Amino acid sequence: MSTERPSKTFLQIMFMCLGFFGIQFGWALQMGNMSAIYSRLGASEDQIPMLWLAAPVTGLLVQPLVGYFSDRTWCRLGRRRPYFLGGAIFSMFALFLMPQASAIWMAVIALWILDTSVNVSMEPFRAFVGDILPEAQRKTGYAMQSVMIGAGAVIASFLPQILTAVGVSTEAPLGHIPNTVKYSFYIGALVLIAAILATIKTTPEYPPADMAEFNNLKKQAFNPFKTVREMCRAFITMPVTMRRLAVVQFFTWAAFMVMWVYFTPGIASGVFHATPGTAAYETAANWGSSCFGIYNGVAFVFAFALLWLTTKFSAKAIHIACLTVGSLGLGSLGLTLLGVQFTQMGLIFPMICIGIAWSSILSMPYAMLSNALPADKMGFYMGVFNFFIVIPQICVNLFFGPFMKYVLGGSAIAAVGVGGLFLFVAALFTLRVHDRQTQE
Image 1 (spheres, helix red, strand yellow):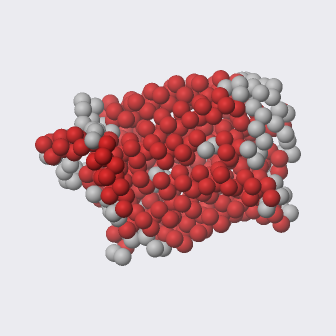
Image 2: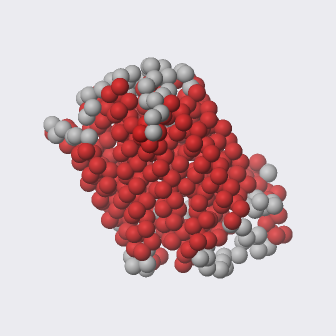
Image 3: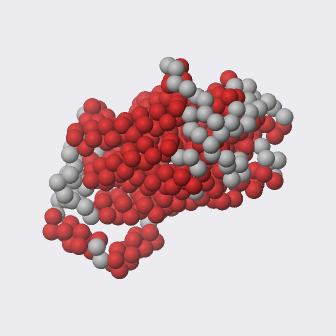
């Protein structure tokens, strides 16, 4: 592929990233509601992390393979767009299927299908920006992705509350999913497919510069021995910038996985003093979804600030500052270990800090990484980079349950506070990352 790309207008970049609005809409519904769905179906709080394993394990397996094969794909739809479309179609069906679950095993299977499909769509989008935009505009492109991700997540997170306000019932007996959640997932399915189709329609891809060389690589992609050998070689020889960012990502995503798993159960028991199957628990679950909407809303607004900040500061400096702010917000929830009691409205401040960090997490690491990657391996390396997102999530799901139960005295909201320490460690390791803009 040629690395020379013409500059894009603001509107072109916006439509190029619109698909991420739909992907994040579906993903936010999953993040904001799965723990509550598992609780409604009878899972205990210390069982929930294991039930989340489907998401990170799927990403670990799917994203590198999708990235590798998308590097070697060219057809009428282009290179990355066939994967956007295929993943979106299956994601749509999974979103319709999820709220029909009447047992834990059904919800786990639906989550596995959903996360596999979302990963098929999501991974090529990271490489898509690197493919289409010139190097000078990549920070802007990833910041725009953050805008779209924030917008999709905000609407999706508040959707159960919005449906409640217009009269949709929140009541459901233990073992059943309320209509507010069901209708939210149905709406999410339609939004996801519409947004992906809009990006496919408005953003053509560039063909390979040397089609003969590309066809040779394409043939090798279907030779399993050469495929495995090449993937192993690329993994071993990954750029230094990517290696150092991997450590940053590990602590960052461990922090957020802890929050996603424990926040809703934590505020239900620690702030609302509610148990699953009660009206108070449904109120807590809706507020937990709204809190996710708040931090995603802040991320959405702050993403516009990032569009300006990227013209003044390096991605590295921005990311260090944002992770530090996020660590203060998330860490403040750990004050429950000292006897501090949070009120419903008192949860807003941590969400604001987390939103600032989240906006940077969704954009700045990819801006630093994309400029350090070879163009012909962009998709594969973006997929491998996902290892350092999903491995910490797997570790949290496997080991954090016993830690929360025996070390933190079963306090789910205190467990969320531990994530603040993880974010601060991530900020410290970002100091070691080589950013070409800082001339290190």
